[in-house]
Amino acid sequence: LDDRIGPKFLRAGLGYGGGCLPKDIRGLISRAEELGVGEVFTFLREIDRVNLGQRSRFISQIISSLGGDVHGKRIGVWGAAFKPDSDDVRDSPALAVARRLIELGAEVRVYDPAVSAEIIRTALGTDSSESATEAVIGADALAVVTEWSEFRNCDPGRMAALARRQLVFDGRNCLEADRWRAAGWTVVQMGVTAGNAVG
Image: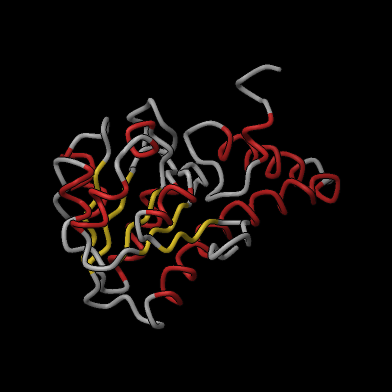
């Protein structure tokens, strides 16, 4: 029942980030190895491996859906913080996704309601968008990587009219997929195979 550790942390998605949990898990693994009981914490290594692997899996979904190559594609990225209602970008899955897409040659437009343009520019070497709407204009795809209420509550019909292609990757499974589909979007969610979503 404690919201800090409740069922929401068991949902499929991009995984956790932040400055504490990833560091603490890796610290426990390291200390166990120092004490010669590393095998006891094999499950923690797997947790860390799977968590980081979710980022790669999400990026692979985007690449595959865009014909096997994102070079030259414009991708709107909603989110930079590792969680909503925060400007914390430490070990942020959102920034890791955006950074990798940039490395692969995509034109990435990032918007986050709380993370400053300067932090995004420093982290990614690119300017941020000033609004969720601006990030979608002319986009070949939209990636939702932080579950801000602003993104959940936006008008998918309005966004569809702005995008070049109506393809959204919901890395947090926070969008009402049926509402987005009704507005003409193809919705790809992590861990979901119902309808036209791809897990």
